[in-house]
Image (cartoon, rainbow, N blue to C red):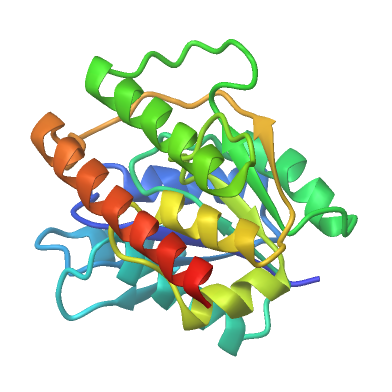
Length: 232
């Protein structure tokens, strides 16, 4: 069974090598591709030196474009499982084996590493917490499926979803959008508990103001999508 870890990275030169090293330490048998999303720093060189296959995008496409690139690579190279791990060091590789197990057993199509199934040390900012609660509620409203951590980017998917994501992956807040799409298409998604680590370097590009903008934009997009489905 071929397994690939996809790391979308934008200006993560201070953390990317450690992320790759930790994955290799815990999962030496798993391939790694880092999608350098038009970084202006040494992200590409650091990732390559750490032993990852690097795909350099000519300019910044955003998380959606970077992830779709990774899934296209996974499909074209016939991987059976793909794992999404952020380049900032927040996703702890020690949980990957547990997250993969239901996929390997053929029980589900996607597993989300969730911060909120069990009590953890993770303490989001007020703005981030509000966004997580809002989007989880929105997913439940649109799909009737309960998701506690709709914005988690720590995910494992099977070959069918690799195929789907290689053809379609949204741009803004893709974690939320793809959940709605997957539920509507009948894919089985579950959450499993993980302990997220603190961002080791840099800062999130999602500011409170940008969070509000994305919340409004993604909500309108998903609601319009729901109306189109209802009309079909």
